[in-house]
Amino acid sequence: MDRIPIGALLRSRGSREWKRWEWQYQQRVRTWADLVRRTGLVSAGADRCRDVVRRYPVSITPYYLSLADWSDGSDPIRRQCAPAAEEIDVSSGGIPDPLEEEIRMPVPGLIHRYPDRCLLLVTNRCAAYCRHCNRKRLWKKADPSRREGYYCRMIDYVSRSPRIREVILSGGDPLTLPDPVIEGILARLSAIPHVEVLRIGSRTPAVMPMRITPGLCRMLKRYRPLWFNTQFNAAREVTGEAAEACDRLLSAGIPVSNQSVLLKGVNDDPDAMRDLLHALQRISVRPYYLFQCDPAEGTDHFRVDLRKGIELMERIRTTTSGLCLPRYVMDTPDERGKVPLHPRCISGDGDAGEPHNFFDNCPEMK
Ligand SMILES: *Cc1c(COP(=O)(O)O)cnc(C)c1O
Image 1 (cartoon, rainbow, N blue to C red):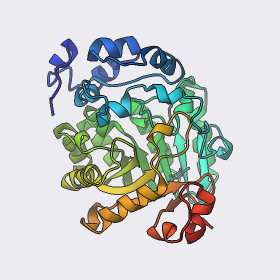
Image 2 (cartoon, rainbow, N blue to C red):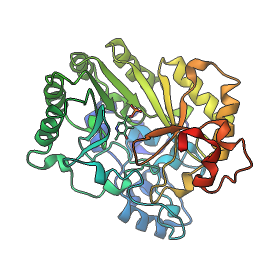
Image 3 (cartoon, helix red, strand yellow):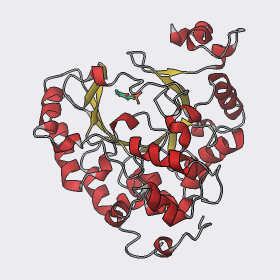
């Protein structure tokens, strides 16, 4: 896995500092100049990339930086974290808020789309900014969690909504917050009688696995049933450190599931996808969803044609264990939620171009 010695920073790999998540978080690459300096990256569109970073900031932990092959322009890790000129192509489509989350917030930061569960944006900060993120519109905003009463209003809303039985902590990445803040939120939610299940969505096992400390796991264990959803998109992200992080959660009785995004040039061929799913199964992480990449602004270059995605997953389905099969879904802005994508969606002679034609054969889309 240590394929690229990229300077002084990486010489500390494996050191005591390296293993502290606070250090990883402080040492993140935050500018284009810093990225170039630390990786020796040469990019044809360097000027454009500086513009990209002005609009969509960069954030990469030393750990995640060390997984990429910076000499390879098509490296799947690099593709997910390095700014690319395509992000600001005017010709590319996309909308800032494809899932219309902003209009589904009864109180700031709480998305209530389904009757029985809701999702809290507990921060907008992440250890690493994924270039394919469907919430990249939020990166440059001030951290909402600093606002007076931000969490109180969410918790109050949940306590006044008896139909909500499951609450998801998302963001940003909830695990960029200190343990006592996370515990404060979990404790107050779990004290609400109708809240039966808690869930955390965090990419830290893939981008900053040292965040999953024994202390964090001891704390989280007290708030079970607690489900942990993470996001690995490439087999090479499933390192020894990542496996240990997931194992600490699993040992604390916290099931770990994975939500991947289908990404062009990262996991959109059968071998790459199968390697990823098998790697997850080997570390007892259950593949849960594979998302069609949402039409968010600045992510066009990652989007895989639906027909291709369906064919890909059909090939995987027929050649691998059911235990490592995620549900391939497309998220929608309304109550239909995450709609499963089946081969019958393309069984007619429909053209894969336009979703509304495309889904004529797909009962779930009606
Ligand atoms: C995805 C999502 C959920 C969780 O959906 P599941 O299908 O239960 O994983 C809940 N609320 C919102 C707003 C979501 O986007």
